[in-house]
Length: 133
Image (cartoon, rainbow, N blue to C red; front, side, top):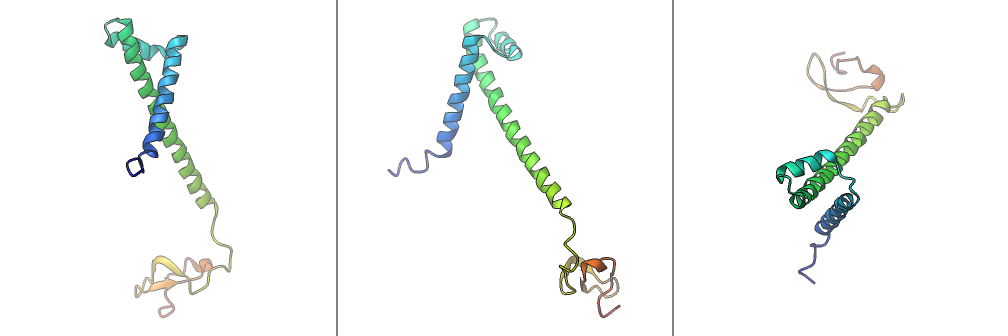
């Protein structure tokens, strides 16, 4: 039991994915629906030997499919992050009255004495603390 613990999760999923990819490539070879550019590269790398070219094509195409999947996942993550940023930007300021004079404004300091400011959102242009104003 201890030997198999933890070995079947990510590794098994990766192996299943690779198996499915290689199966799809094999189907391409059987049906003749290969990517011409990769087939040409495989033929060139095998000096025209068709059986060697088939083996080379399988490796090239499987790698290309994995690359496509990785790029698609990266693009989806970038799209999700952009949507999060847009949602954050479009949420706007909090409703008036939701902040109080006791709410600290991160990083804002009094221009005279340097004390941290606690201001109402509506007074965002007020730059003096209560002692200096």
